[in-house]
Structure formats: structure tokens, C-alpha cells
Picture 1: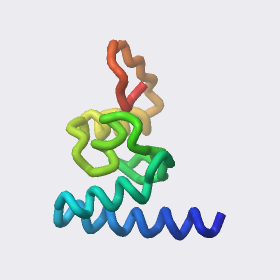
Picture 2: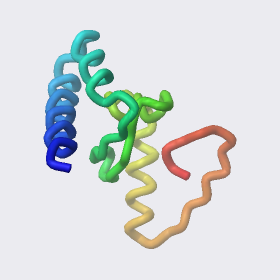
Picture 3: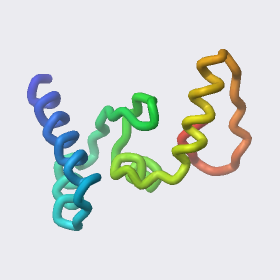
Picture 4: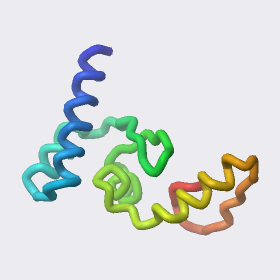
Length: 95
């Protein structure tokens, strides 16, 4: 358990560095460190468990997800107790 927390902390530190200085070597190191696991991150005001299994999760992990505005809108209305229905036909973040 402690080892997982230490590893998670190190990965989060590497991700923080990656968002400031994006390079292939650092991205490869992060991917190798995560492997098949999932890591808990805070993204757009939400706590998410993400891994590398899908392109959406990978984009969220490496802060390359393009729907941040939608997350802000959802968060705004969720705080006002609105309900949401996702009627899309794709795999997405907000279901």
C-alpha cells in the first residue's frame, strides 16, 4: 500500500514536470511507470481514476483532453443540483 502511494506520488510529480516541459523521453517514462495500473488524479475539478487503456484516459493523464470547457459547465450546473444525460454514441468522460 505504501509503495503504491509512493509510486503514485512520483508519477504525479513526473506528470507535473511533463505539463511544463513536454518531451518524448519523459512521456515514455511515465507510461512505463504506470503500466496497466490506474492512477487517481484531479482534473478540471473532478477526481478521476485514469490509466493508459484508452486514448481519452491517456489524453486526460497527459493534460491533452480538449473538453475542459464542458467539464466546467457540468461542474457549474452540478453544484446547482441539475441532472445530466449523455446521449452520445462514443466513449467519453462525462457519462
